[in-house]
Amino acid sequence: MPNEQQHQHRTKGGFETRAIHAGYEPDEATGAVIPPIYATSTYKQDGVGGLRGGYEYSRSANPTRTALEGNIASLEGGERGFAFASGLAAEDTIIRALCKPGDHAVIPDDAYGGTHRLFDKVARPWGLAHSSAPVSDVDAVRAAIRPGETKLVWIETPTNPLLNIGDIEALASVAHDAGALLVVDNTFATPYLQQPLGLGADVVVHSTTKYAGGHSDVVGGAVVVRTLELAEAISFHQNAMGAVAGPFDSWLTLRGLKTLGVRMDRHCDNAEKVVDFLTGHPAVGQVFYPGLPEHPGHAVASKQMKRYGGIISFRTTGGEQHALEVCARAEVFTLGESLGGVESLIEHPGRMTHASVAGTDLEVPDDLIRLSVGIESVDDLLADLDRALAIGG
Ligand code: P1T
Image (cartoon, rainbow, N blue to C red; front, top):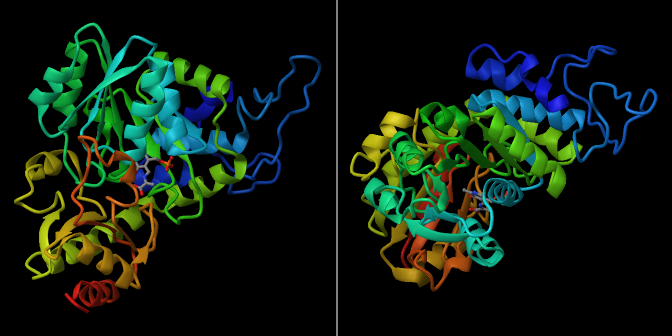
């Protein structure tokens, strides 16, 4: 199968080398340096069963998708990668591949709203129970595990939108002691800043819509697994459930990944300056950023992340109304959902990305604003925030 060939393509070298080369060799026939967008649903067989390179039908495998899957597997240091139509499609496939009705999962108490909704409104009626626990509290996660029933410990780190930090190494051993797998949503950190599989996690999941794609022009998801056994389970369900990434989406995501390292460094540079600006601003209350020494997860983040990322959340001192006004007044920061693109975005999680958790344990403060700090000139970002934050402005 093509997916089994993922690792034959230049998986050696430093992160940036692999980001540019892993998953694809220049085309034999033409020398094309970049994989073509194989806009084909099916493949000519040389006699029944005579597949060329293992390609049979594009739900099962497509060469553009294979290139992306090999690339992201290499970047995460995993056995195999899988590309999906969205982050939530990737999550759904993990849940149904690795759990069965009657099982239980532990999820973060401040997960992305859509992840919580998937567990609560889709997986639970299907038969998968769940409990939520703060990812920053190893003992609370351990206590939430139901021995014999818990199959997945699912974390985000940093979490969306409160930027809490989970200790991947410690949580992997908590999960493994109970016979469960640790799944890490690595969307915020990306493999450039954090490598969960190397710290003992079993499965990494991404919304590649975010930093992996990096240009806000494609929706996608990815799964990377540590073992062949997990690869077989995900591979079977990817094909059986069918929520695959199409060839053009795969191509866009692969193009984005090539520049992941340089983009992340600039996202981090700009975010650090924005954090400096916000801290101590009279209209700003608590600032949530794992790079701040006073952040409760700072020590763990420093241990497991190369830098602290491009997402910042903060509370305004003027309450919800003020938070909504700030969002509306920002200009360089575009008011919109999503994150991780080259352009800066601002949003109100309580009314936007996390509206689906209103009234649950996961409800976020109503004066909370989330910034996805882009890679524009940082002075323009600071001036924009200064203008937008002015009370009564
Ligand atoms: O949107 P989709 O590609 O399906 O990915 C879902 C998802 C999964 N995990 C994390 C950590 C995410 O942030 C997301 C999507 N998040 C947003 C759309 C958002 O604005 O937070």
